[in-house]
Length: 519
Image (cartoon, rainbow, N blue to C red):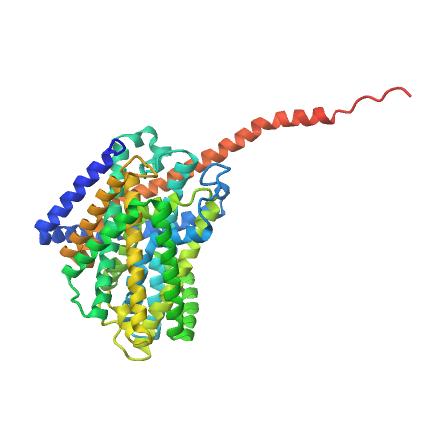
């Protein structure tokens, strides 16, 4: 355990205290978290909105800037993974479980209770998908892209450890190796722990919902606890095999299963309606992106509550996930230029997410709006399976979905233990298995405690609280990146200038004309 840093021990103590607190006094824990969450929501909603918007603007700037040619690695480094495998790995780590959990439930929830206007109308249907795209689109992936970019740049080009604290080296210098750096890394680990625990809890709830549909078993905490226990064993086995085996193979399996499910579903769904809805709402999303991304409701308490429960929660969730997803994406992105990297991470997943929600969410909306079914009346974890009930081959769809949730569950937890292990071992790209196992157990225990204390509400509270200090760190990370990029290009320009006189002299020497001899 010589490789283990103080970040590991401090984070472990904090997490264990949290787990014990939730196990002994669950109501006290959820009450405390709720009070703190309410304070952050009401006092700092503007901070989350502005931060998410800033990261998007910054990412777009980098694509078109002179910094885009800088490579994430040495100049002669080549990408370690092919583009299809790279995309599968970053996407599986990014949002897998969430797409299945919220694929139907979020658009239909917004359709029933939209942030603007009356629910259940054609306008509400368009608004529902626009805001779903907002929550899962450019803003989210911009947060991931900036964090991943910083980690990959400092790790592979500068040779710094793959730590969140190292991304502040241009500002803090050697202080990143002292107590300040430790605090930053602990904040990143705790935020990651809660962010991923939320996904695991949602995954367990939806697996339980699917099994309840298939077999009639109860949908309760006991079953969900058993699901988490079984999956914990599976993802720890996967984590022990390393990133080039377990995560890589499972990520490709995820992509294959998701593609099969998507193709089958789109043919069973009201295809023309869904494609028309996607085209219309994608245009509206792009057109209204700035106003939606900065919208708050200071004069309307009901709308303010909606924005806090959805938009602000998502921005906090993506910030909390950023060290996890960012570290993982950085690890598999060596050798790519900044321009290629940000373009791929920002645009491709956004379009895939938008199309996914248009197909699944649009089908749910069609069933309620056109057929009069009560899709919005279902629990969040059950809405997808309710839609399946209305389609042919529903049993097959449920089985494939459960397998997909399971593999997403494993890859998310597997990737998280890898990332947490890196942060706890001085940025090692091959953390010891014992470290990953301990952190994996703590991750699962945290998910169970949050499920026990408050379900989705408990997850929201933990995420919003932990994301605030991390959001501040990430803003400074962006400033540090600009300083580092500017310094690199200035150094490159200086070296070229110093070499220029020598090249000129050599050219003149080669072109010197000898005097003509006498005839």
